[in-house]
Length: 107
Image 1 (tube, one colour):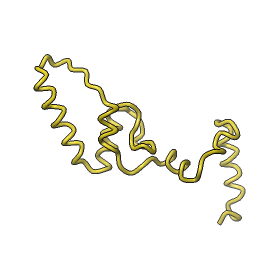
Image 2 (cartoon, one colour):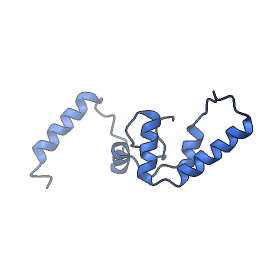
Image 3 (spheres, rainbow, N blue to C red):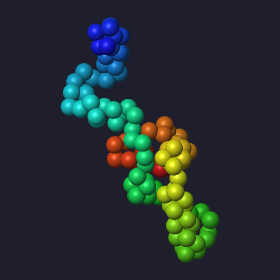
Image 4 (cartoon, one colour):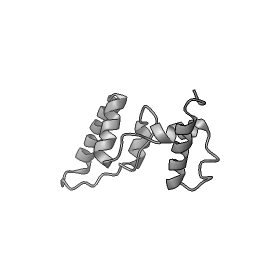
């Protein structure tokens, strides 16, 4: 397959190095590159929690805010991987791909 697609692959490589410095991918393994391009299938909710901050503008008591956070994260835990990716997209406005650690940009 590589032989019959050699010209296309060469042109893809040239195009890639139009936007990336040559040598910038030298230390990446095939798995590293796959994760950078595709992300992982499931979002680690604990990592997502660690990246998330709440700006409470409701004026509610701290107890109510804690109750809300518990409810929110319990709901997120029950989501399918696709629903979690959609939620991250909603929060960040970025593609639903996540990095190799299972998190996306800060939500």
